[in-house]
Image (cartoon, rainbow, N blue to C red; front, side, top):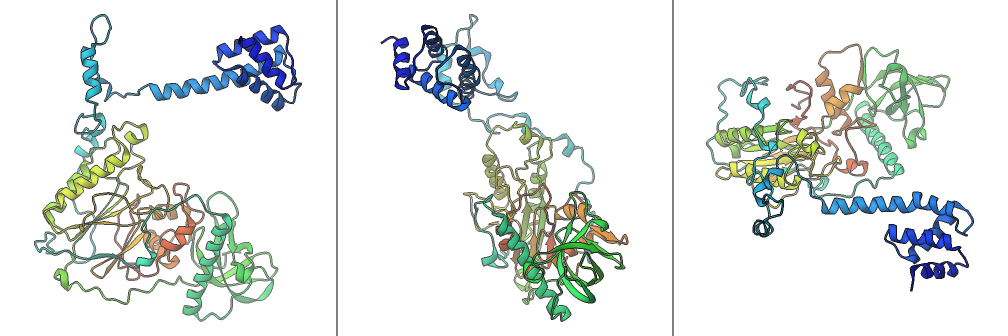
Length: 528
């Protein structure tokens, strides 16, 4: 049957008729866009219904349909076909296809073409040397390699190289409160988050009640001429940086029905505040419009572990090496810093090496440009193999702490442990954050630069010294690894998991907080 008759029959099914000119126009569409008579008529019916116009086709409306529907669909299908069939090469891989596969006339040599099909090219650092694996000039030209820039305690006559073959134990501080596997994120409901944030205020209230013998909390919004004890969360009344004049105070649902009221700190001799901080103190709200604080209670530090570290098994000396990523310079993926570190480990034989991500840094220039000839997971697995190769003849154990900045891993906080098939007794995969028990010594670790995030938002009066120590103290008194709320735009927090796995229920002996801020070691209420 002629396609013109098919179009006419399809139109009759919708009780439509068309002139010969209209039928020829639709016939052109069928040939131009490679579609059937049924498809072109169905497209017209759908188009006329969308435009709410007369279903009887006209030349003008058919032209509109071509521009708005047929041409757009044709462009999409063309792009999809190109993306499937057109190979993409970069400067490092295009040379793999040599010119000698073609003769002078431009016709391909069938023998060479056949050989290419039989032996596909494997893109890996072993088969080619792309630009991303060339040594970094930045790392080669560095100064001060191996220099001691900071020390704590008595470091005189300390031997850092161990010779004793001892395999120490590494376990989570609390197995039940340890994130052990990936989870579904981006499923959080606002009411669930609000409930979690409210519970944090309620939990903090119990700590303050126990330390300061508080029997009743006042409602922050009810007018009262008497001084009352209040507790709540610091908030800001704007989107800009927190200031003393933009402070808001948010109470819990149980104590204050979730009320929020302006906060006046003009009577305080000193303060250090940031958004999300839970504070308690005494104040007055005479008119019900704002609460004026008279004093702020000092934060309550978590209790230390009741178990005293027993280092008798490791001859009273526990050697731990800690390093934080990224482990490659920004202009290369040759991982020279990691290689130098593992050479040090192989020479000095520490009991434990804690490597904090990212291992495959999402901010690396080459990864951002896509100039990598293997998948991110393959790159990660190769790194694990290299790390294990350096400790295969020693008793050293390696702890890997992931980062939400890992290109191959989950971009969420808390971050589940890495996944690898090369599991051995010498490799411990931790989550971020985590509290590790290494021979009774508790190590609190997170890869997030929480000190930098807090430092950008914190306000204090007067300008108190030891700012870095004060920021560390906030983590301990707030009893979680990331007390800032709302969080920095750089980090994605799942508060359903945050409530379960990001707390600091115990005061660790060592708290490791990698940061872009200047390096330091401090004793914060018994925690280094």
